[in-house]
Every structure is written in structure tokens, then in C-alpha cells.
Length: 339
Ligand code: WQD
Image 1: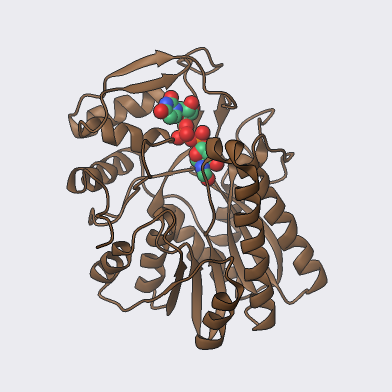
Image 2 (image 1 turned 90 degrees about the horizontal axis):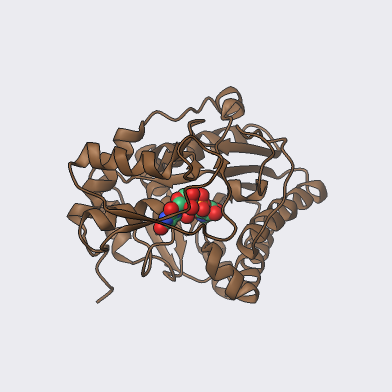
């Protein structure tokens, strides 16, 4: 019996594969490498000393997806695969809806057809839109402000309807906050395509001199220092939450939602200062205008995940800075291109 991990060569996916392999699970990675590199799979093998099966497949290729289910005895799925850039989704909504929604529909059809009725889904705190208050609980109102976020919310609803029609399904929906950091080996980490959209890879690239300075998107937010506050969580803590979620999904059926964050909010300038303190590097920055769509504050109330999954974030901000720096300094240009 194997666990299918879609998007398993991506940033969060690869760290999750490592944790599942270390836990003794058999893993099949399904990835089309549209936002990752094949060398990641070799690095996973190096880190764990374990074999992992790779299927270079696009979820939109129904025949190829079904071939994976015919070939491997899949018992459950961790579903990461999807396009995830907020700004890009606003420019090409049809590509995002087709890729993320149609791909998920094909995946769910095969999970049902082949009796693999356990799925842990990679959702996002973006489904909360602009929360009235913080910290955010799972019962907060849901709303989205961009097509990427809309695909996450739609997939949550698709999975709920799937369970309603087929109560044998176990669905665990994990709403991530802001994953950063890297595996302690420095062999795998965050490697965004082109100029990073997200704060932390931008900071780590400034630290390595790959970018001249950080643009701080606004300092007039209603926060302690005027810059945006987010719940940054170590990617390994996030990966370990998936083990706990599947452990529970193997025992119960139904649809459950969990905020996966630390419960701590840090501002942009908090992150800059922490990275400088931990690494000794200078991170020059300029305050510029706000980025459209950004909100003041967003951080989790992670109590439900602790109560129901027995999961709690263990790494602190210094760990996140140290591990992200090790990855970026060992891989200043990210992963090598496929030869
Ligand atoms: C964090 C803070 C920015 C870049 C997004 C998605 C979310 C998830 C994580 C996919 C904000 C500020 C950023 C920069 C800056 N992605 N910032 N300069 O926007 O909280 O969440 O990424 O699942 O769904 O919405 O993360 O890292 O882009 O921004 O000042 O160059 O850093 O304004 O306050 P965000 P982020």
C-alpha cells in the first residue's frame, strides 16, 4: 500500500515526502515539474536513504493518472499539486481554474474508482480573506480575493460534496499560513521561479546578493510597526502536520479543517531583523507602496490541530532563519536545471 503525494517535488511536497519516508511509509510522487525540478527527488533519496517512486505525470492527463492507480496500490493521497501564485492567478484565471480544479476532479475520480478514500488537501489561510479579528479559527467566515484563493475554496467545497455523496471518504483540509525555512541538510528548500513573490525567499536572495534590496510593501498597516504581520511556520513543522492528519484520516471518516500555523504573528521588519540577527547578513530595504490585496494581519489559532491531531509547531523563528539561510547559501541559484 502506498501514499500518492501529488506535487511531491515542490517546496512543501518534498519536505512532506521526506517526513513520510522517515516514518516508514511507501511513497509515490506524482509531479509534472511545472514548478519544481527532477533533481529534488534524488535529493530526497539522499536525505532519507530510502527509495521513492516518481511518476512524471500531469493531473490533467487522465489516462496517465489512471495508469498510476493501476500500477501502484494507492491507499491515500496528500494533494499539493496546483498553481499557487496570487498575482499570476489574477492575470490568467482560466489557467488556474483549469489546472487546479480539473486536475483535482480527475484525481478524486481515481481515488474513488480505486478505493483510496483518504485525502489530505493543501489549502491556505487565503480562504479567510481579510479576517475581522485575529487569531483566526477554523469557523471564521470564508472569502477570497483572487482566483488562486478561489480555487482553494472551491476544492474545499468539492471535497465536502464528495464526502457527502460517498461517506467512506476521509478528508483532512489543512489551511497553511506562511511556510518558510528548509530541511536541516540544506539539500532541499524554497526555490521560486524567477523573482520571488513571497517575502522570505526574497529576503534570503537579498542576503546572498542575488537581489539588491527588499521592497517593503507599505508601512502604514494597523500593526505594531506598520508593516504586514503574518504567521510564518517552519516547512518541516508543516510537513509533520500532514503525517498527523493522515494518521487521523486512517481512523475516522468525514471532513475536517485545520489551521496549520504557529499562532505567532511577525511583521515584515520583524522578519528582516531576525534574519540579520541570526545570519549576520545585512538586508537593505526600501519602504514602497502597498501591494494590492494585502491585508494587515493574519495569524492562526492552532488549538484545534493540537487538540485533534496532537500536532503543534516546534521550530521557532531563529530555526526558520537558520535553516533557510543554510539552504540559500548552499544553493544560491536554487536547484540545477534538468540536464
Ligand atoms: C508576506 C508579507 C507582504 C514580499 C501568500 C499567499 C498565500 C500563500 C503564502 C500560497 C506581506 C510583505 C512580501 C515582498 C513585502 N501562498 N512582502 N515585500 O501574501 O501573506 O501569502 O503567500 O499558498 O496563499 O497569499 O505572503 O510572503 O507574499 O507576504 O513587503 O517582496 O510580506 O506585503 O505583508 P502572503 P507573502
